Amino acid sequence: MKNIPVVMIIFGGSGDLAHRKLYPALFNLYEQGLIHDNFAVIGTARRPWSHEYLREQVGDAVHETHDQVNENDLKDFASHFYYQSHDVTNVEHYVTLKKLAQELDDRYCAHGNRLFYMAMAPRFFGTIATHINDQHLTGSGFNRIVVEKPFGHDLASAEELNKEITASFDEDDIFRIDHYLGKEMVQNIMPMRFSNPLIKNIWSSEYIKNIQVTLAERLGVEARGGYYDTSGALRDMVQNHIFQIITLLAMPEPKDIASTSIHQAKQDLLNSLIIPSPEDVKKDFVRGQYLGSDTTFAYKQEPNVDPNSMTETFVAGKVKFKKGPIAGVPIYFRTGKEFKEKKNRIDIVLKHINNPYGQAHSNNITIEIDPTSKIYITINGKKIDVPGIRREDLTYAFSKEEMAKVPDGYERLLHDVFVNDSTNFTHWSELKRYWEFIDAVEEAWQIENKSDNPNVVQYLPYRMGPKEANNIFESPTEHWIYE
Ligand code: NAD
Image 1 (cartoon, rainbow, N blue to C red):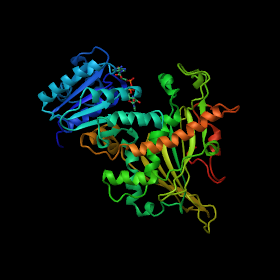
Image 2 (cartoon, protein in one colour; image 1 turned 180 degrees about the horizontal axis):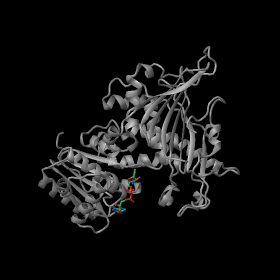
Image 3 (spheres, rainbow, N blue to C red; image 1 turned 60 degrees about the vertical axis):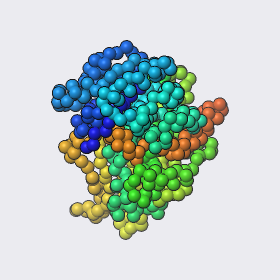
Image 4 (cartoon, rainbow, N blue to C red; image 1 turned 135 degrees about the horizontal axis):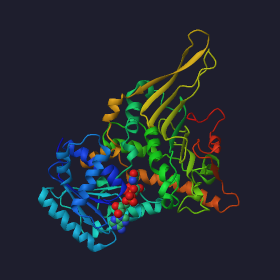
């Protein structure tokens, strides 16, 4: 693998994301030789850490995520890390940071290449981008920026942030990261759809009755109540992860697998996204909040959550497109906290056909993303000893050994940033459409919140979310496949 020269600056170097995801992923890329001799990483945060202390943290992060570590490699890897105490709101601190980046560039022959990673609370993204620009932090080689989610709070704030970032970076150099796009089974959607005649030929509104996307979490808001209460499930999960998955499921076939062709296919689809009216939102969407149990708080009682909060910890809804292979097919989604289990899955429900056996089951295709990775198709066959039809699953799965080789989403996506492959990142034009949809739903809810009867339903924790989510289907023959 080619050794990429670069100085990487991580804003939020003492944070949870850096520790749990970025440092282990960088170590794996180092072990593969992608970043090796000519790289340095500057971790920044406000705390007065030393280089040595950051290196210890990096070592701990690698040990916590790896069963076996080559200690010599780890020592050498960690020696490329430098810490700079830095308050992102203080302009002068960028001058010091620039100086250190230049020194390290010279020492490691990094060819003026810079990679900036915003691993901080989103309210700081605009400030950082502005100061990278006005303090001229960019180098003379490539300059790339990775922006964590959420990218904005609504369309207006996303546009503002985009303006601040594009002042210093070209669209092609902005990597809006969504770690779901690094997941094995999400990356498997396109090959599955386009390389199997069996599947490709039925991927149309003629055969598909509906698609269902479920991203269920077992956990509640935990310590993030203050932040979550300003966001909610729609912004936190639908605007990014669910929409990315839906786009991969509904997009037309790209002419090839080049990044530009894939993004073009996505954009063609998204141009035909139907934005829901307030009436549609009333009819097709359900929002809810979890109740408490003997041992857990109700959402409204969680620390730092407004006791009168209307913020949803669950949302179910419907998406439709006017164009694409499954134009007009309802795509139902639901996501929420305190479900009975963590489960990310997609169910593609095929239409029934008339047949001489009468009670055949529908042929569903299920893609399980987490916690297991597999695809299965339910098919009908004859019962062995009595007349009638039985149902079996044809399963595409990985062995334990294969699963152990699957890289973490962050490792995959960081690799893509280093090699400048933006296939699995969100383009601005896509993000804009997602926000237009989300804003329409949020606005309808705001109007409803001011009415006499705002409908935020309460649901029992550790089950399947609110029963009202069973009422969003277009026809009485539809229901959630995963129950
Ligand atoms: P965190 O709160 O753990 O870390 C934030 C970092 O910012 C810390 O290093 C903190 O010291 C630093 N910081 C805060 N104020 C600062 C200031 N004024 N100047 C300089 N540094 C300052 O947050 P996190 O969980 O690491 O999340 C970071 C980003 O990653 C967020 O956008 C989040 O949405 C996203 N993200 C996190 C995860 C995860 O697993 N943690 C997963 C997906 C996305």
